[in-house]
Image 1 (cartoon, rainbow, N blue to C red):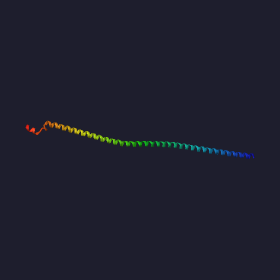
Image 2: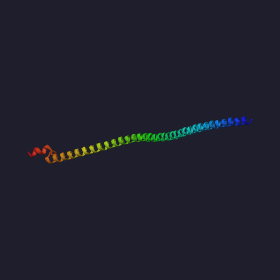
Image 3: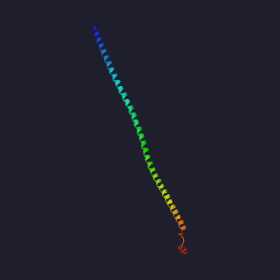
Image 4: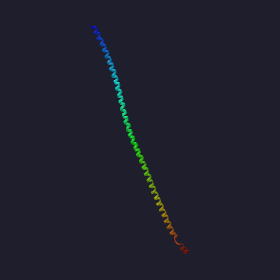
Length: 136
């Protein structure tokens, strides 16, 4: 009975050692899987943060693009107003130039007319023909 008890203890001890070894292997495999899973989760978190940064940057770029589009539209409107004002000023300056040219032509004609009258008066062109024939 003692032998069989001893043999049963050995068997039980071997079974416990085998179970213990199997538990260690399972535990080691489980830890390895948990470690791999942890690495994957860290990589996923890193990718997630990178994606969030990229999305924030894309939103900032969209906002900046909208600002540029708004400024371009305002610049287009301002250029139309500038062109209209430039055309108006061009017309005003043209009229002013024409006015001065007409004034200058009138002044030259007046001077020519005045000089012609003076020359004619000095040469006696305004004297009557009767006076000329008496003198001859």
